[in-house]
Length: 311
Ligand code: CP
Image 1 (cartoon, helix red, strand yellow):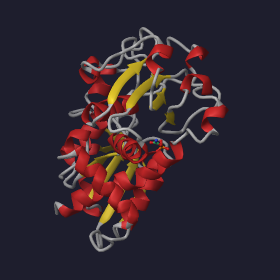
Image 2: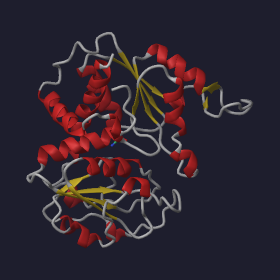
Image 3: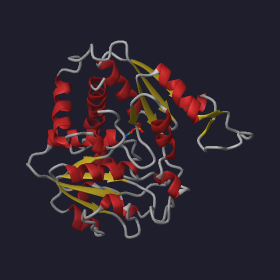
């Protein structure tokens, strides 16, 4: 594997999930693979899980790790041919090449603006690093996708499922802040890839990118959608059509114990208690959010291992 930008970069999701589960039982088996190799992680946005789990994964493989919060560095310019007489001090053309000298693998987190749809869809930050860096790139959540989270979610479902083809529902939830579409997008793409019965439920008007949803069933009646679910993945996203806006905060969409029924509760975290999901769900044995976050390590380790093996 050259890069991990999207789920499609995995030649086989089924094999990746299987291999990640095997890594979990013997995390230091490939300790020598990353010796004298460095992972540089660039964060344009905050992180708890991605930062720690990816560093842990790299260390399982014997890699050195450097983390840079980009706000601590010179402000980067991404436009070509621009007169840099305002706030930006360094162009990504130089920065990406410079960082590549210190890194064997470069991982980037860069959220969307949620104000300029076309710019976000172009993945202007991640694409610039793919274009100008000279080392493999890992997407640690971009404007439109979070493939490391989706791989961890697939691992978690594989480990916990009690039927060969479980029913999985992605359910929108209210949130006071406008949030990106990335987690939902990648989760949808992952569920379309693995062997599950998958549907999405959200209020009318909260349709996601049709190029991602494709023919996945969308059921506007949340109660109807949740009937018989084995896994319920709850996530807020801002309006995609009225781009980046909050057009509903309907508390009726918060996940409750009653709505969840016998299903397992999934969320990528961080999560706002009693806004997105009630305490009773998160504090119950049906919540598998901690297992999901643990699997972030092994999703990242699988990806790093594949890239290191590629030389
Ligand atoms: N789920 C996730 O990516 O968490 P962080 O934003 O804390 O990294």
